[in-house]
Length: 105
Image (cartoon, rainbow, N blue to C red; front, side, top):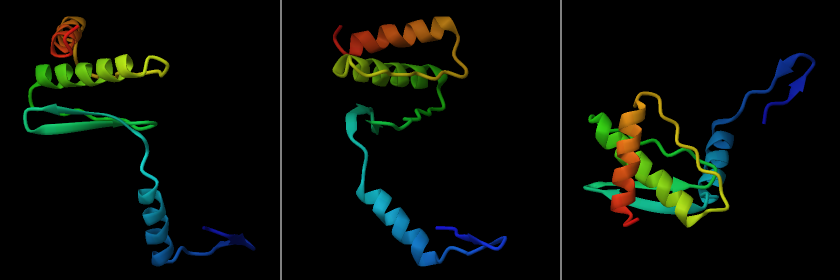
């Protein structure tokens, strides 16, 4: 905790930083799903961002689409956001078609 007195800030002690990190680690957020693709395992948590990265753009889009669709189907009362920064409409459509196939829809 940084306390400001008379224009000066008290420095954090290293033990305070590690103690705070340990407390946060003990409060792991709720795991919504785990998804395995080949040898990779992806986890989606409540209130967290799941980053999907692959050297192959098509594979990244397909995995991300499958995870997003899986979470949306399992938790219809929750909002699911898929952030895409590089794939066009055709690739996204293809990714969701593949996701529906993988999830037997």
